[in-house]
Amino acid sequence: MREEPLLTVTPAPIATLPEFYAVAFHQAQLAAQHYGAVAAHVAQGAQAIISVFETLASRETARADAIAEACSQICGAPPDLKKLPTTFRDLVPAQEVSDIAQSGLSTPYAVWALAVRHRRRAFIYWTYVAALTRDSAVRAAAERLAREALSDGNALRRERRLAWQSEHKYATEDEQSDRDASAALLESLLRRDIIAWSQTLPPAEGRRLLHVGMPGFSSHDVILPEDFETPALGEIEQIKQRALRRAEQLSNVYLDEADRAKDQSSLDFAQELATQSIARLAGLRAAAASASEPA
Image (tube, rainbow, N blue to C red; front, side, top):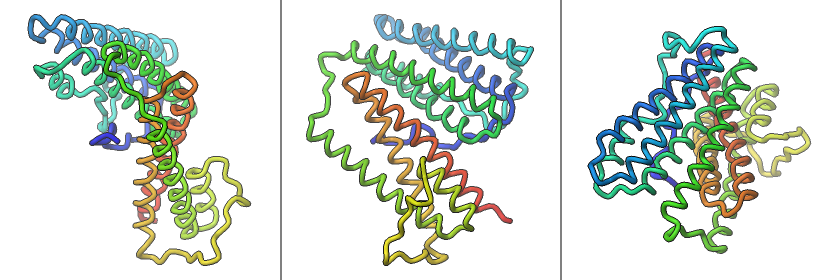
């Protein structure tokens, strides 16, 4: 588990394609600028690190160009940065890049690892956007960028492994079993929290929550224990927060499993679980926020 979340603030919903393309373009533009800026200031003699940053800057420049071209084709005009939301999120903060560049202990592996982290953050961000928007065109575009972030992450992981191949260690089978058991337990506990939460809501809202928190839900699937008691009013908020915490833990578990995958099949499976888990977390957070708003 990482020491801090990859994405600390839930993105605000994006309502229109022009806004979507403005956000996507500016994110890629800033990433290219930040990678390129540090490449020009890395100490002489660190050519291997400079080459990695230059490669990353080139990739982000190409991404920005592709986004601008798509925006012109679909919206009839290039991205308009005046349409950026006030809650715009920079997915490649300059300080993170600078910290790696200025460290005397940095290696190409560390730079590739940072780039992997940035693309994982992009994957989480666009999965949230897809889950929260009400516009089908924005949803499809966000899902496309989320898939692109996954593909990029795969390529960057390969570079990271090559940079530190001799020291790359896979988890033992016992450690893998422990993680699988932990994920299964968390899923079971989360399911119980979501069911308890749903019982405090009006029937229609409760069913919607179950659909969000338990994909493939059927009303016949929910069997309450004989000793089940509807949570007291003072317990509801505690249950909500516990469910959100467990849902976020599971998203991190599945993302970490993708990082440790030994083969393409395992990677694809872990990424699918991560995608579903992040969408679930976004839906649960939206449900919690909606419930807290005054009627």
